[in-house]
Amino acid sequence: MARIEKINDEIRSALSSLLSSVKDPRVRGVVTIVKADTTPDLKQSKIYVSVLDESTADEVLTGLKSASGFLRSGLGRALNLRNTPELIFIRDDSIKHGAYILDLLNSVQSSPEKSSQDQRKESTHEKDDNSPSEKPN
Image 1 (cartoon, rainbow, N blue to C red):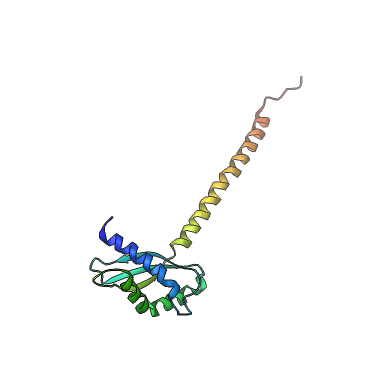
Image 2 (cartoon, rainbow, N blue to C red):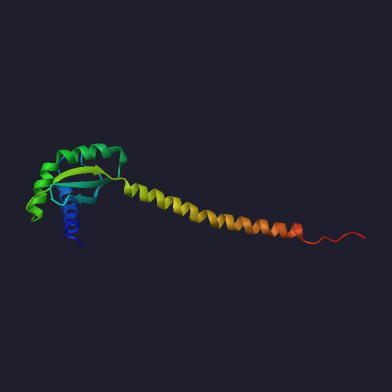
């Protein structure tokens, strides 16, 4: 694992722990730090955030941006880095998108079972129709 990947994991982990101590009332509900993407010079870190309640997602992001100084100082105390990166919060809908894909796959998976049963029924009816019929003499 490369150094920057380790730093990204540490940033994600530390920020996840720090989220519970944010006092901003806009940061509420289930907020998940999905990914951290830090520049090689450690000047900036894009933090991808997922919010369970979509109606409050923009409000939560605003609250996180407002609390970025607090989170950055907590991050500086938690990590032993020369520079603590500037935090840039970005909304991430990958969890929602993944759930949508999973629902699609489940619906496709259940559809072939129904269609195979329908095909079996149709093939039995076709056999009955194609069976040699007795001709009256």
